Image 1 (cartoon, rainbow, N blue to C red):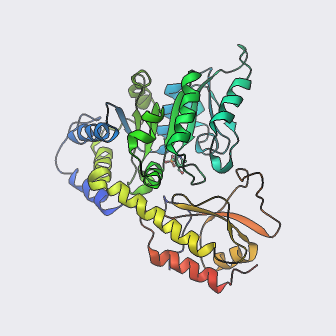
Image 2 (image 1 turned 90 degrees about the horizontal axis):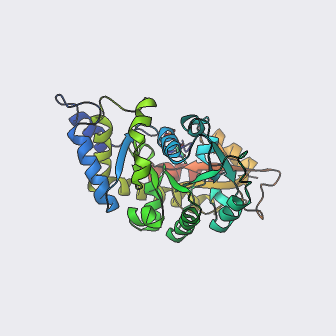
Image 3 (image 1 turned 60 degrees about the vertical axis):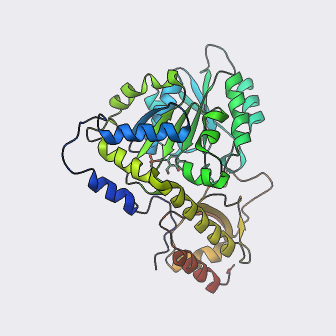
Length: 357
Ligand SMILES: Cc1ncc(COP(=O)(O)O)c(C=O)c1O
C-alpha cells in the first residue's frame, strides 16, 4: 500500500486537467499568451475575484512569489514575512534575486502565522536611516507553511497595517484553495477586500501539472510584471497549455472539490493519529496537513511499515509547546488524490505499532 504522505506535490495531475491539456493540443494557436485559453482564464479570474485583475500564468510557485515580491519592493527595499515562510526559507533566494538585491525580513509567529499588532511593532521598530533597507511589503502564506489559515479579519488587520505604513501586501496562495474552503468565504473576501494587493495563486499542488498565476489587484504593481516574467524566462511560447490547466482547474469548481477532499483526508488522518497514546498536534490540522508530535518508537514503526513523511522544524511551535526528548515533530500531507484507504492504511500501521513509545 502507498503510504507516501511526504507532500501534496507527490501526486500527478487530476484527470480533468490532463484531459484539458490534451484537448488544447489540437491544432495551432497564437503563441506567448495571445491564445483563447489565456483570454478565457483572464476572464475567469476576473469573475471569480469580482473585479478587474491582471493575470500572469507561470509554472512554479517560486517564480510567482519572486515576481510578486520583486514588483512590490525596490532593490534597496525589504519585505516582511514569517521567518519560516517559503519565500525566505525554500526558494534559494529567488525573491531577493528577482528583486535585484531587496531583502526579506523574517518575523516570528506560532504556526507560521503573523499577528497584525506584532507586525506593526516590528515594522515600527526597524531603523529607518538611509543605511537600512526600508520595509516596502509584507508577504503572508494562506494557508501557512504549517497548514494554518488566517481568518478574513486577521488578513484585514494585517491589511490595515500595510495600508497605514504604505506596504504592498502579498499573499502566497500555494494552498489558496485549501484555505478558501476551510474559511467558506469568497476569493474576493480572502484577498483584495481584506487588503491583498498581489497574490500567488497556486494550482499545481491541488491538481495541475505545473500551473500557478500571479493575480494583481493593484494596477500600479501590474505594470512591470509582463517584463519581469519575460526576463525570468517564464513567458511560455505555448502558454495555452498553462492556461488550459488553469481553465480545467477552475471549471465546475473542480479546484474547490479537490481542496475539500484533501482537507477531509487530513482531518481523517488527524482523528485517527491523535487518538493514539503519546501523539498530539503541534497546531490544529486546519487544511491538508497534520503536524504531529509523536513518540520516536511510533515514528520508527511507521517508517518501518513504509510510511514516508518529513521531520519538521520546531521553530514555529507555540512558546508553551515543546518536542520532548524521545519525541519527534513530523509533517504528513494529504492531497486531492489521497484515498480514504490510504489514510486508513497508515492508521492501521500506527495502531498495530500500538502508538509505541
Ligand atoms: C507555502 C509555499 N509556497 C510556495 C510553494 C511553491 O513552490 P514551487 O516553486 O515548488 O512550486 C510551496 C511549495 O512547496 C509552498 O509550500
